Length: 494
Ligand SMILES: [Zn+2]
Image (tube, rainbow, N blue to C red; front, top):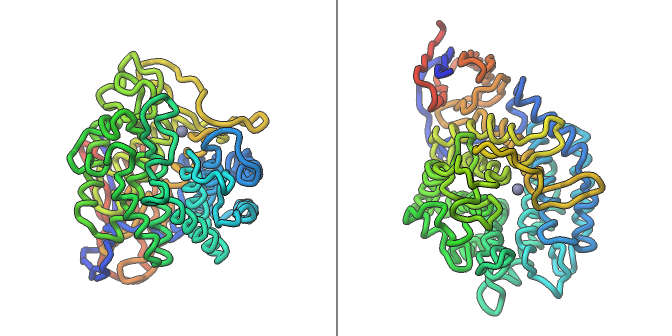
């Protein structure tokens, strides 16, 4: 199928006044919670994951126990934040009361583990900071932030976030504190010189906290992270500015997932600082990953030939190497979901439809392809050189349930689909993904506006969009023309 046929009713065209805010205003803005109700295939996948994973299999209480009693393996403290993060994004889409109860109970349970120095950490105070601790604390902060933003703006949660952040600021920084790039496990865990890119991913939760509180110390800490360059020996921001290819960034350890997570935080940093160099760094990274790393199924990263010791999780010139017969692991779901989320940030920032094209390619191929039909997990996808991948990887057994990084991140990718599908702009609605469903939103003049999208896309390329404004008004409806479509037709009222 190479043809998308779009039928649409567009009322008319008129641009509206731009917000004069000093901060960077997104070109496309996400809609309010519960604005989008999808129907059909992707909605089924979302509900399957929500029921059988976030409301089903996940042992939240045992994730919290890692903070209360310590954890038996490095990085296991990431599990709580990852599971709550996707649960709260699912709740943003579908306000399920049972899911809310689960989220509320586990957040209260986690808050009860906050230590005397303000840390919510798997590590006892006198041993902080320890190698994987900052990465785990990043996910604690992101889990609490998603909860505060989408489920319950409980002041106790904001207070806990501030205490966690203030404690990190008190121990991490220039001498006599510990530098952020001296805390981490990569790549000493595989016998190489330290990289430690994971700790700097605290950039995102610190910027979100700054945007809510306006308290300068959080922005200052974000600036510190940015100035430290992300890793022990390489400045991955300068490297992107100089268009170093992703597989050569961070030297021996260009870990795709962690690096892209760091860049998600950099977008939040740009929104506040409006630094044009930062924007260029973001756009260079986006275009270089898109063209050099993303495979035919929309994900990236591999082991051979460049980084065989990074378990298939490094940038590896994957777009070129994707069918290399020597590859044994590639395309971690964590990488794909984080790439998808980073693309959504680029889409919001620039309106570039290439970002939505990348998201669409990943959703229908890499993401759904890695999901268990039973909804209770994700894995690596099969290799593109013909080998079936094994299910082994980093994680932990909880009785008979194997929880891994990837099956914790997969649901977040699903939860992002309705978040991305339709956005708003100062000119009117923006349709990024063509899924059947109903969208209730506001027009540029703040009148109620409904879009009804009727389609079996992508089985066929026929899409009917009914545009139903509550009041007569002139505005634009923006439609992404899929990059793969050779022949696109738009008809208005026939
Ligand atoms: Zn993973």
